[in-house]
Image (cartoon, rainbow, N blue to C red; front, side):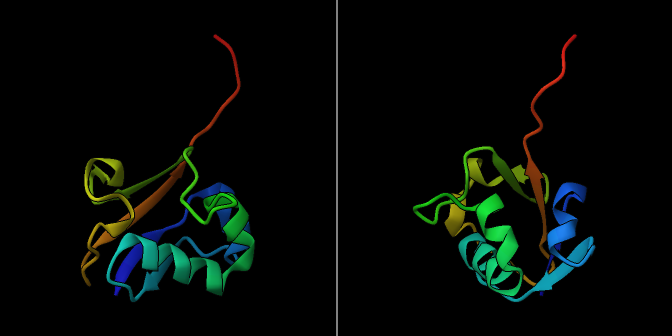
Length: 92
């Protein structure tokens, strides 16, 4: 099973779990499994069309899935997936 790293702002929707084990073949299946098991995550990860929100960055290892095959990026049992929501605000 792949390991999914849940960022701190989203852990309140996963019972404060930082890492989850997900059995999936690609990123779309991984995200689907996450939102089935933790329905509150859905609005934070997916838009109204069921696509990964543009401000949610997902990495397989060190690679952004946008530079791979997006939702069709293959997930293996030793894959580490990181979800990184964009942070906005602040000033210099």
